[in-house]
Image 1 (cartoon, rainbow, N blue to C red):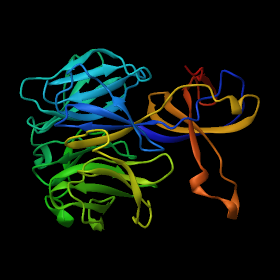
Image 2 (image 1 turned 180 degrees about the horizontal axis):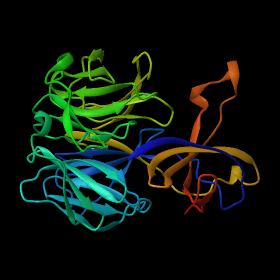
Image 3 (image 1 turned 45 degrees about the vertical axis):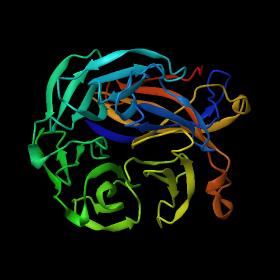
Image 4 (image 1 turned 120 degrees about the vertical axis):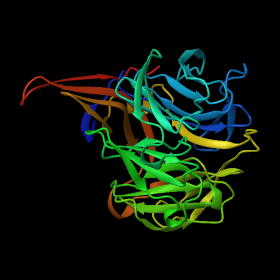
Length: 361
């Protein structure tokens, strides 16, 4: 799979084209609280628990699939659960994992779900309907031990898997399917590997080192550049906030940092507010709706997505409003609005079919 940065379009908006300017939801997985805790990503206010039925046991990775549904890894029950991404209503058990698999990480590759298994020490492929499709990463390949929830597909299309117990990161090549050690055991002080986040430009990445309270920076070859954040308790989840800040989930809070200097910008949310116990993972869930302010105006939308054969699929198209251009630019004024999704399907070397879905709720 290749990944491409796409697409800047100037659109004259009608009522069916605009999306809500409301802040996306921040999802914080609590392993010991056995739930996903939902916060407002702008104010940090706690909103609700994802599921009060007791279905989730040992919450791990969360993410929106190619079908627009929210998926949750429930390690304790050995299941991948599916929810409506807007109402948050439970829909079904999407995948039942093998016994003693220990599901942690999750990525979507086309119409497949790839699940990292902590006990399995590898990554298995499943269809969206739950059919097992074999290994993406065989057990212990590249020295992997304790595959964890920070698993991600990098900007180069390769799969990166944190090894919690091997204190390492392994990488699966998207063309050959071969897995090798990317970050060697303990390199740069890595201890109990958790989250992986590629920085802007894709040539460096940040890795949370839970065992010694650090966020460590590495180059594209897997060599350590150095620790950029230290003194944390047990850092796990890591992501970029819609305002551009770096977010790190620690044992007691989700904190914001400057994405370049790594200086602390403040606390976005405290785990006590949402009664999160055992933070493991953070992600964002866009809200749907109609932004009345954009109706009849011209604005730009952009997004990125994978190239699959002759089709470019962009599931998260956004528009941005707020800041001025040039010297008056203030990132604090930036508002990121979800617009919808789009497809570009090439029918020849010079022609393509462009389609989109931006009807809102």
